[in-house]
Figure 1 (cartoon, rainbow, N blue to C red):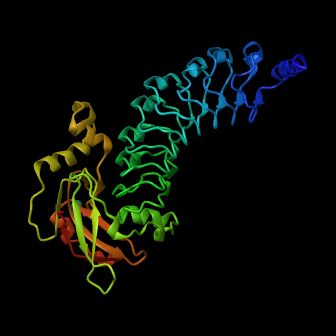
Figure 2 (figure 1 turned 90 degrees about the vertical axis):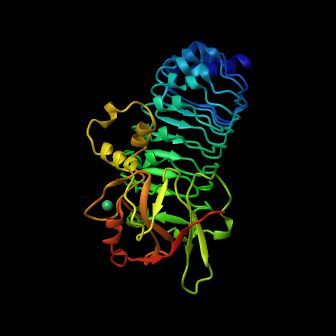
Figure 3 (figure 1 turned 90 degrees about the horizontal axis):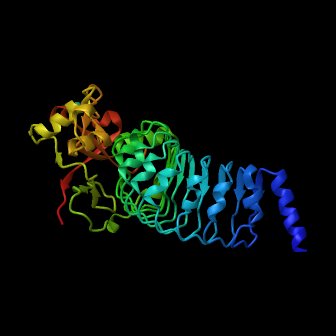
Length: 376
Ligand SMILES: [Zn+2]
């Protein structure tokens, strides 16, 4: 009987390039695969009992796609490093706690699925996977999504639902390839103030602490046919205490609405916030950032220091004044209000008092609301 099975497997290996070996209860892969697996390109191994791949997996020299979801992997399968053609790797629903810093050995990877594991962070080596188009890390334990994720030059789909993220890297807004970004059920306190330069389909439902958007972001979402606003309007009572580095504003509702005050939290990058009647000059620090950003070879002039980092992550917004559109990095003049299309709070940023004063909120459909810097 066993011989017949072995012969069947050998026959299958000799005739096929795709193996559907899902739900077979394999703890170890059949040893025939080592001897006759050199033609195999796709290997489906969903829902088996694999704890570790055999070292001879590297003999599958034509392997492009491997699906290992619902197995018992505790460690990342570094045995695949010598499968030089590997492009699709699905490791969802396993027990991974760590992605090794050597993952850049999988140079040609285009699709990586790490859903349903126990990951708390991502190693910077992932940014060296320069062909990565699809990255899914839903249902893990990530608290931070690193800025370098925006350096993955081919990335089109990024799915990070069900984690503990409080913010999205600003650099993602500058990624021109991005088409889909899903970041539902996290702990987002704000979205980037910049809009995305790509026509991205963004989904961010069930982030109860998110209670405002920037005007450019709202405009982009409405342009893309977004109508989910009700899902993200949150209860203002649930703003939690957290890092002291973010400026918070108390926005006052002056009508008869139920909410009197709403606390909103601005991105960390923003150090200074002014109102229209603050006759403050822009700091030299901020002015130099803006000037450098508009200088062609600024990157070559800068050593990797805080300047360099701020440049790389890009401006936090651009001045909303039509004629101006200066980049804004750390200081801004601010209008807060609601819009006619949406009952959401929006913030609009300006580079200077002058730009704010010449801006007509009404013509943008913004109903301005008074605000104060909030201190606990
Ligand atoms: Zn301006």
